Image (cartoon, rainbow, N blue to C red; front, side, top):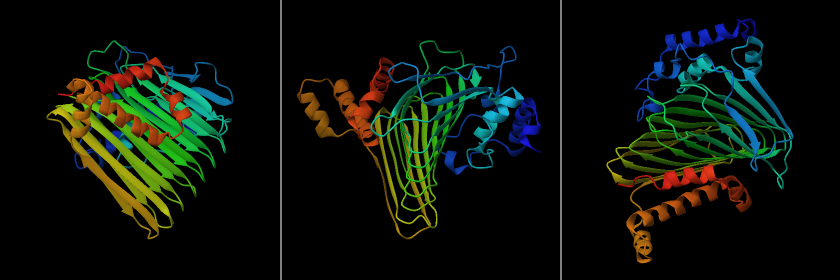
Length: 403
C-alpha cells in the first residue's frame, strides 16, 4: 500500500498493530540486556481526557537568542494526512532492528514534528542555533528532522530541561531525531537532557554523514526512572567522520548510553567515548559498538569508555565492541573502571577543599576535558557552554550525591 494513500489515523493504527504483532524489546535483545526498557504500554499510553497536542514542542532561536536566518523551517502535524506524508516523506520505515520497537511506538503516537534545513554558514562563521523542547503531554513522541546542506557548517545546542514541577508518575518521552549531512557539511551538536527522576526517556538519534562531512555530538544527561541516549551513525560518504561523547550521571537512577557507528565507505573516522558517573543504587551502562564494512579502506576507529562509582553500590557496565570486515583499518578501544585518582584528591584537599568540593573539582575537570575533545575549538565550546540553563544542569550533574 502506498503510504500517501492512507490517512494519518490509519498510519498511526498500523504502526500500533505492527508493534503488537512483532513484540516489544525482550530480555534476550543483546543491545538492551543490561538495562531493559519499560514495557510497550508505557510508551503508548495516552490519557483519554488529554487532547492530542498539535504543537511540536520545539522552540528555535540563535545561540544569542535572536531569530535565525538562512534556515527552512516546517512545523507539521502528524495527525493531518497531507502534513504527515510530508513529515515522514523521506524517512525510512522502522524495519526490524534491535531498537525498531521504539520507532514503531513513535510512529503510533507522534502528533507533530519539526523539519529544519540549514542552508548557510561557513567554517569561519557557522550558523549558531539553539533548540529547546518543552514536553507537550504526559506521554509524547517528539520528532526532529535536521538537514545540513552541502558545504554548510552549523553549531547547535539542544536543550531538554525538566523544569521545577515534577508530574505524578513522571512523563514519558520517546524522541526520534534524524540528522543528515550533505557533502562537506559539518554539525557540532551539544545536547543537554535533564529529566525528573520519575520520568522515562528514550532519545534515539539517526545520523547519516556524507562525503567529507563531519558530525560531532556531545551530550550531558542525568538519570531517571529509565533513560536511554542512543546514537546510530552511518558514515556513508568517503572521508566522513563522527565523534560522539557522553557525560552521564546517575544517582539512584537508571541511564544507558548506546553508540552504534557504521563505517560504510573508505577513509572514514569515528570516535566514541563516555564518562559515566554513578552513585547510590544507580544502574548505568555505556555501550559502544562499531561496525567496519568490507571496502571501508583506511577506516580509523577509537572507543574510550570510563566509569567512576562515586559512592554507594551502583551497577556500572562498560561495553566496547568492534566488528571488522576489512583488513586495512586502524582500531583502538578500551574501558576503564575505577575511583577518582587519589593523588588528585589529595592535592585538592591540600588546597583547603573538603572531600565533596575536591571530588566535584576533579569531575568538572574530566567533564571539561571530554567536551574539549569533542569541540576542540575554544570559541565553539565557549559559545555552546554559555547560558544560565546549561550551567545549572552542569552544576546539577557535578553536584549530584557522591555517597
